[in-house]
Image (cartoon, rainbow, N blue to C red):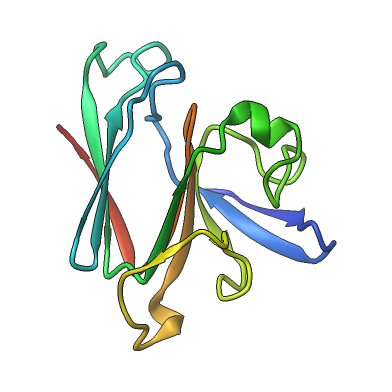
Length: 149
């Protein structure tokens, strides 16, 4: 896996790692659905069968985030992203993928977030972002996993 150096809006260097190798959300109509149970957040959506031949149209997946501290699920879409309505831009972080961000998530996180659990050890938490067609999902959690439905 590659880790890329990029510049943040404040011109400070940070890193990101692409997490969705060999899979992605449907580029046209992923129809994401979010479920929160305790400190577990599950993002369900249709998979991209156009780009990845191991999937068929209509296949779904769950991406589950465990021991989640907070999350944001916004209506920021690709058009808004390219118009500069996100704190990152396309030169810094390419749209349409799932990433782990290596940032100070305590200050670099959307204002419209939901806190769902206390932080016992901030060093164990990771900052994730997933850019979907018509939504952006971010969370701070201990771990994640991909389960094809």
